[in-house]
Length: 445
Image 1: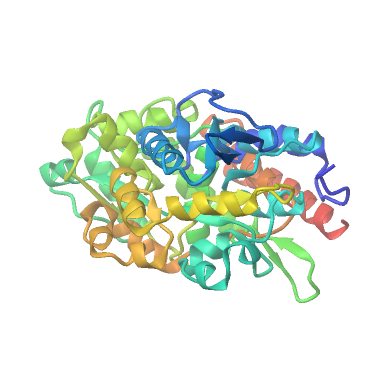
Image 2: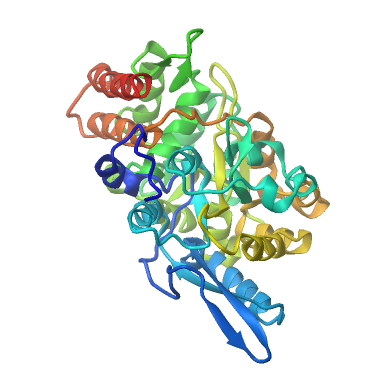
């Protein structure tokens, strides 16, 4: 069995939380659909030579516009007649970890698979991924943006190849800002004032994703980190401690929920507003701002092409500091695959410079290879400016075992305040209790 017996979280706990892992702006509105197989890679006869079939699980294959691009790349690669054939299975982003846990228990992982980089510590802790440097070589691995590669690493060892990155920020409708004469805010108070100025009748300043899932919690994390909250850190003795429930956490939770509870700058029904709903509100002009990752650009412009050139972005305003949450997904090669070299060939094909730039321009998902990220095509995209600025101060996700659970901790906190079931202080106190349990479990593992 691939699952490590010493894993800090029980299998049941991870299964229960797996629906929360598809965060930081990496969402899909499609249902899971099989388009291939997840069995061990098979060897088939193709003409006079032997063709190796490698199995791959992807969430982006179900998304738009990402899916059409990825499928076209797979088709192009399979037509190269290089003895390698890729078969892909589509799984919803929020269901990826649940899928991998199920496959791991039966020793039937695919040859390579897509992972939300926030889940890197869990994938490594479960023993699912091979180290990438022995497969790709040091020179190739060194060609990645440092922040992206760090997100695919544990203790300085890279286990994933970042496909696309992202940064947190606020996307805004330049056309609505111009019409209302509103300036781009640089502080939290200015953000509130701008949202109030943009709220009129059935049009609102800010669309908040208030659902209790990875999409909602991830956006709250963008804010609380700028308030100075470090969810989990290790003290001088190597023990995990938490800021959750502290005064900084209380201040962040109050500021976030006040956007709806006190200032009324969010469309009604905030706790039912999931990511697709928020995108629709923004695209239709019912909301002028959206806390999100850069990937929202592609989702929005694919729905409403007329919005191309009418979008702008800026970093989440700093309070105590200015940091951006890491984002993105990466390719991980199974530690048990017999076709690691073949999987690497396809991954390198996907990450060729021109292909990365085309994908980024289409989707808003940032390149991870330095040569592509620094290309003028990317740097001169106006809607990317705030996200690129935010990338300069990436906040690295804690590697504490069980980190995935913190999304539900946050989700319950802000939802209880939105609904009036708890005060900010009561919600923060409950969040602190649960965060401490995560610390205790990790410290006692």
